[in-house]
Length: 76
Image 1 (cartoon, one colour):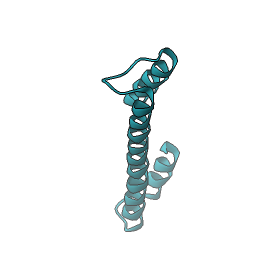
Image 2 (spheres, helix red, strand yellow; image 1 turned 180 degrees about the horizontal axis):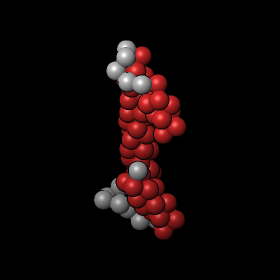
Image 3 (tube, helix red, strand yellow; image 1 turned 120 degrees about the vertical axis):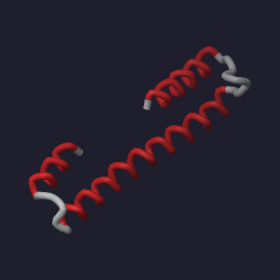
Image 4 (cartoon, one colour; image 1 turned 90 degrees about the vertical axis):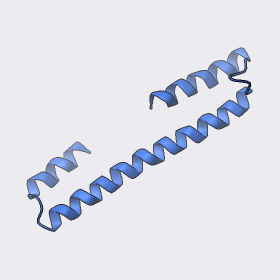
């Protein structure tokens, strides 16, 4: 997430002051930023969805108490 903030800041500064970042124009670096942002957000969503499903199936199969499931739901 910090990398996304840095990329967005650099993209905005590059567009405002019209300078290149590592030889890339504002448009090219913005496309790179969008790609990185989309990939990281997808990974975060996948992590939360998969861990939630794994915990739910473990509790349903008897590996935990119902109290654990309610705590997990509050966490997310």
